[in-house]
Length: 181
Image 1 (cartoon, rainbow, N blue to C red):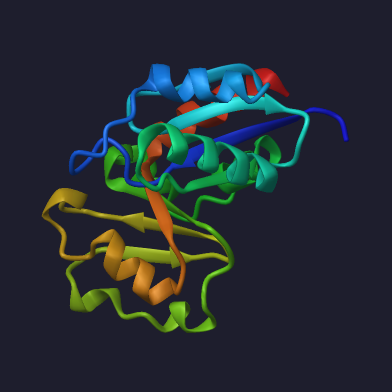
Image 2 (spheres, rainbow, N blue to C red):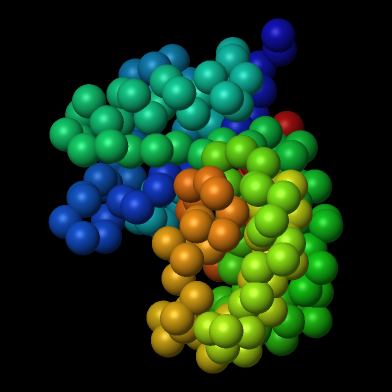
């Protein structure tokens, strides 16, 4: 396999006392032999080049970070090509143009349950959801912090673990990944 550009998203770090700095993330990734490691903001985002596929990066990086941090650090990964396809497939273009901080991408650790498409988000507010195989696009018109439609609620509907990023972060990670392709 040629080297693979990988986008990595750490789940639930730097919240609730689960501290992991960007420097720790970079150092751990470099210690595993990954190159061109770049973190983005201190919320568990990394783009790197690996001799392995994205799934192996998720396993290796998650295990190494868990050992270093002393708490579970799940890592969800996509290749640069997959990440760019996610950006291109955005079904909420007007919302993302008008207010990208209220458009959120949730990436799952695998395909969502078939019943996820039947999930009724209107029970929680005015949020708009667009389910895909391993992603969810969401528009939190009143802001994610005020919403009752939380990640745990979405995880239950999806039957998977996930992690969320606002659209500005998604675009920044795409730019970092495309620089390395």
